[in-house]
Length: 269
Length: 304
Image (cartoon, rainbow over all chains, first blue to last red; front, side, top):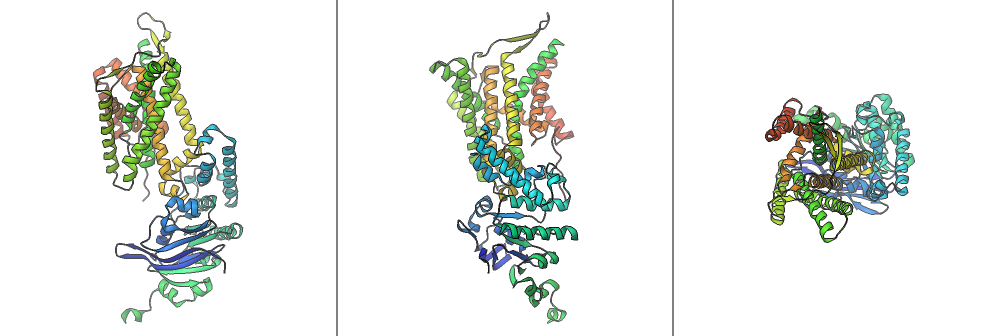
């Protein structure tokens, strides 16, 4: 087994009396695609929100094994989770910066590195060489990801004007520009047609192969889940009901019950 | 015609100063969605710091006028920037998650404190500064009304245009500017990309305050009289300028500032000087009624 990248231990997130995530533990491996599936309201997005710092969980731990040491994500601020731990995320409802150009969306994702190189804009204002080189490198990286997501010819368009499928790819490109160790994708295939969905699969597999990072995926599209994930974690009512390879999970009776409901006699009896 | 031209020059000068103050309002609004009601006070502090700085440099330090002006400029920008930073730290950041009315009220509180601080420290009487930069050109040598352009007016124009150009460059080209625009469009997402949003917000207050400080310096030199209360009216007028241009829009703030300056100058010239503020705020009402997004503002389309 590959070394674990993300360890979620006994995570609990309550909203009032409602357990959105209830005592959840699982691990996601480095260089693996881990899919989190479950019916609507199972707590998948809440889990993502805890990992990326939107919510602070009431109980449990989220640890990321970073070369610089093990980091407790539940204790970091959201920008530190992105910057220090290297967690990037995309959203179910796309959150680009709509009034910035496609290229700028990718460069702003490299803000941390640029700010450090520019000594907080001072060197940038003076036009020092170090800053110019850092900026050139940022543009270079942005171009690289534009190329890989086939968006190069839209570089100067406003991000908000792109077609939906392109915006999805741009969001992934932007997340990759932060050079993450863990990429969290919230329903990346939602709203894509079968061809776009197949392209997405290929892109995600390429990222896994070339970048060697961990991918955590929430997805309803079973062709994506079964096609590319190495491990699947199934949630229902905030609890983990199954975990394993796609094949194992597919045959699990608990999973079938969660998705299709109890048989009639169970309801009456 | 000559009279008209002269009013045009005067109005543009005044408008340039309003525009500089308006930039601070519109920037903070763009990023936080809130009005910084202490911004006019910063401008007043800028006027006082520049007066004190200039007098200290000339009388105590014995510096020549140009050097004294430069020193006053740097001192003003440094101190007002510091005040901008402080206001954000004290009145805004602790209330970031509070209802939107709370930071508004705390900002008004800070503004009252600073006004009274200036009144106590400097007295309530108006402070004069003898003209520092004299002379100018006579553009049209007409018998009934000579049109003149003073050096001071040229300095105001050059200064404003330079600052606005530099500012536009910073917003569009630098990393900080990109981060500001990103934070403005989606603060949470900016944080998720590793941008330290608090620092970006601080930088916004600091830059806006420094610009207001420069406006204070120019008013001190241009009019030669300041008191602790000038921040209130100028602040509200610059706010009107920002709304007129479309709050949140940077070119809008500059345009709005110029228009307010012109309206004020022409109203005073052709109608009555007592009612010039009524004209300005009448415009604010009309804009809010007929074009709430302002001249260059973007309509806020909420997707359902």
